[in-house]
Every structure is written in C-alpha cells, then in structure tokens.
Image (cartoon, rainbow, N blue to C red; front, side):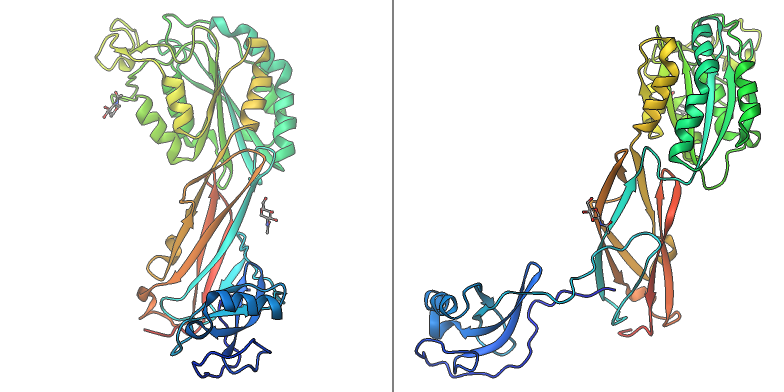
Length: 424
Ligand SMILES: *[C@@H]1O[C@H](CO)[C@@H](O)[C@H](O)[C@H]1NC(C)=O
Ligand SMILES: *[C@@H]1O[C@H](CO)[C@@H](O)[C@H](O)[C@H]1NC(C)=O
C-alpha cells in the first residue's frame, strides 16, 4: 500500500481571462481554476486565482471570505501563469500508509525506471534483545584472585539464565575459563547448549588458581571462543560473550606463531557478530600489559619479543570495538548483577543488507546505516527505494529482498516487487 502524495491533483480545470474581476463568488467564478492542494494530512480542493489579476492581498481576503478554514498559497499549473489557491481543508480520505516493517512487501505502482517510493521503518529493541535466539558464553578469569567472583557466579548464574530467557525465548549458554599462558591459557568447560544442567555443572567446577605474572591469557581465550567450532555458536543467534578478570591479557601473544593483539581479536569477534561485555576488577582489564616473558616455558606465546610493553585500554578496545560494554562492578560479589544490567542495557547496531537488490533497486536511508538503537527503545527512520536503470535487461517482473540485521541477527526481509518493468 504505497501512494505518492499528490500536491496538485487537478480535477477539472478551465483557463480564464486575465482580467480582474469583482469579489469571488464561487468555484465557477471567471478568474479561477479548480485545483486542490495538500496541507499536512488534509487536502484542499480549491480554486486557483490568477496571481497577476488578483494579487496576494486580495486573494487572501477573497479566500477568507469564501472559505474560512482555507489558506492561500502559490499554485503552478502547466501552461497557466502561476497563481494562488484557496481551498477548503478536508480530511484526506485514506492516509498514506508510511510504515513498511521488515517482513512486509512493497510493490512499485508504475514499475518505471526511476520511480521512487518512500516510507518509514520502526525497529524496536525490547528488553535488551530483539533476537528470538541468543547465545551467551561466560568466560571466567580463573586465576587465584578471582575466587569471590567465581563464588558469586556459582551462586547467581541462575539469575542470568532467568533474565536472558525472559527477553529471548531461546537462550543457550556456554562456559569456559582462562588462566595464564604458561598455565591453562583457555579451557572450554561447556559448549553452547540450551540444556542448563551441564552449564551449571561447568560453573560449579570453576576453581580460582594459579596465574603468575600480572597479565593473563585473555586475548588467547577470546580468540579461541571466537574462532573454534567446538564452542558451538548457533546460526542466526545473537551472540554475547561475557568475560571478567582483574588483569589484561598478554599482548601480543603468539600461540601459532602468528601474533594476536587487540586489533586482530576484535576482527575475529566481529567476523562472528559476537558482542563482548566485560567486567573489570582492580587493578583492571585495562592496565598496561606485556607480551609473555622470554623465559616463559610456553615460549610459543612470547612472540620472540620477551616482555614487550603494550599500552592499556585493552578491554575498552575489545568491548567498544564489538558493540559491547565494559561494565563496572562495585566488588566481586556484585559481578552477576553487573553483567545482567550491562547486557540488558546494550545498544544494538542495525545494518541493512541490500545486496539482493544490487543494481536493480537502490536504497537510501535517513539517518544513514548502520544505526545504533538503544535498549528498550524504538527507532524510526526513513527509507527510499528507486528502480535503477540496471534493472533493464533482466526479467521485467521481479522481487528483491532487503534484510534488516540487528546485532547480526535477521529481523526479517522487506520485499520489493516490480511488475512488468517499463521505461528501459
Ligand atoms: C513507530 O514508532 C513511532 C514512535 O515510537 C510510533 O508513534 C508509531 O506508532 C510506530 N509505528 C508503527 C507502524 O509501529
Ligand atoms: C596487531 O597485529 C597486526 C597483525 O600482526 C599488526 O598489523 C598490527 O600493527 C598490530 N597492532 C598493534 C596495535 O600492535
């Protein structure tokens, strides 16, 4: 249901003499044309005065006298001197349907090359989600200093399960931990599953232990969770990775001889549309860091650099770089509450994939994509579709699709139909 707003719908018109006439008596007066104009959502079936003959002041006076609720405005009619219109304001019979949500179909009424249709789109992020399917992986720093955060996780993880299940009908969880590179750099305790029994068993098996120098194996662990198939991220799910700790990861780190740093790990996470939320305890995930020391028994992590210093800000880079957040926690005992709040408050990124329509139908969005949508809010934006000359030469009747993706998850497709393409 798409209709262009027609500003000057000429019902019937008759050209008139340019001679000034006495006060207007009606639509059949000798110096008027019957036209209509649109004003907001109302249509004015109106008269068009000859501007030269009447002049603005007289036209206003005549208009007011004749039709109390009408206004005078310029009108341009083909072949006629620009004039002024005065019309009665009446409600438009059928309001223009301006919304085209994902999942709806739009048909170009004329199917002509160059034809443009415009509408609005509303996207709502409900209760911190919007995705029907969500995967949530908890990655714990399991070094000695984390014992009270781990105890909180054991006691309260059930709150996470309850809260995330409420906003997304189908939630799956996974659990893993990291220590230092020369210790256990990463272990996946439970791959992503909707069965919470083994998830709770995995959390209960977490033990705080080890960790030698200050930096740990954060980057290596994040990279593993992003890239290893055994983690079990589900297709079409919103993917959330939560990690917590009190020190940054060694950086760079070279598990396979190839250096991993914050930039490369962010790239791996983004490739999977994984959003990272982190909680940092003192001294902090954002502290300055180093590559592993040269005398490290697991030299493979050292990158041959032996304690090269790196700047701070690692966790901020990773969380903001993946559309997530670094959420504060007053103390380790409030870890789970902080995670629940932080994940619930995440803004989400909307990206519109128009590749299916490429070269055939062109789109513009206002504001431009990608768009950030705050949690628990609705964003309305404008979308315009135009039939491109590139559509010529193919099938004259076709439909192409536009995919709306929120945090990488499809909200549904808009379909654009051209029936019997003309104007090639
Ligand atoms: C779109 O969102 C606006 C603002 O929240 C609201 O007024 C309007 O009713 C919504 N329209 C649709 C079709 O959802
Ligand atoms: C991160 O690693 C890549 C690839 O090895 C490198 O090009 C880049 O300069 C590194 N970035 C930093 C900040 O060290």
